Image (cartoon, rainbow, N blue to C red; front, top):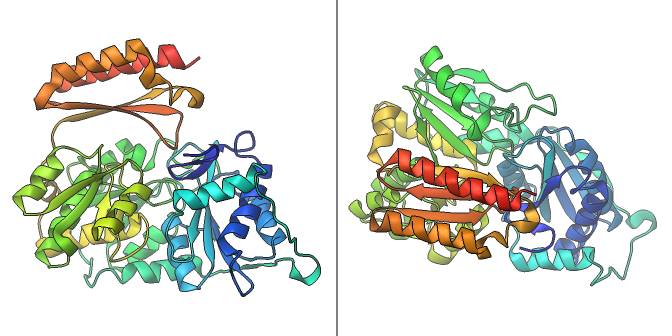
Length: 450
């Protein structure tokens, strides 16, 4: 990762870390790097989520893009995967999303897609940074009629829903679906899609006000959805994150179906339908140990990538896999889209539910999941790369590794998108795992949250 780009674009607290000046530079130099070889007037699509700072950053970002002579098409509030798709549909030179995904509203982010709808490789992000840092300069600045203009695409949500519905031929009539839109970018698209598929839809957290995105709701906070599913008698619940590239589901009893289980179910369904190219599924080092066990029983190869959906995608392309993802709910189906798409993942999951006629609580048990505890230790960003060199931290991790041995594992890694260190422990005794994870988190926070 560079000075500005993390595992999913550039993120920070809006107006202090991710400033309008930085957004302008990202728009200006990002547009230049991505379109400098174009022989036509470049076109770049810009979408955003519902957080209050998105309008401010959009103005600055767009100004930067226009300053290098590119045209901007504003999509308004749309899911991140919609931008990836619409970039391809409208043959744009790039797509940009203003969103901090599952993070609180104070944060925001800017991430790019190339003309094919894929996130940028490290070397392209590094080139953009070299311009921001003044290591490279733009020699020819457009003036007069060569300055860019902006237009608006008013059908962005409808275009995306039309696209998403093509991933199923199944009628959802008779199903009750509860949806938590996280007061985020899917607040229009998801209800529209499932109503068009014939389902009876119950919706919560779809009244964004700029500051309630991800607040005690969505894929990171499913407690209310768990209760809502039972209260409404829904067959399944769907929780999206703020930019709708993550999905966590809830069965009819109120139990969570995380990304690992969803990946397992989708992969097994593809295998059954002879659509699982090369019989390969890609996960990460954070994937539950039960997932490869499930795949082994079904003659499916499981390959681990670094944490981050961009690295999952890189490994999928390298190995010729059509499905992969993360426990957090980032699920990539290259048969459908070029990035994590929570709406399409949800439609495919419910298609399996409808086709099999099995309750979600039965379906989720098809995938083996071992007991796992995940705790986030809050530390300052500047310490994230230092903490694993600390003697006390190293010794404690070593002791825990010896304790869990071959019957479990411990994984400690800094987040690429938040000022936290993620502690994951798998084993047999939940109480011990929770205690050990909390103890390690307390040590990290005491040392590095200063």
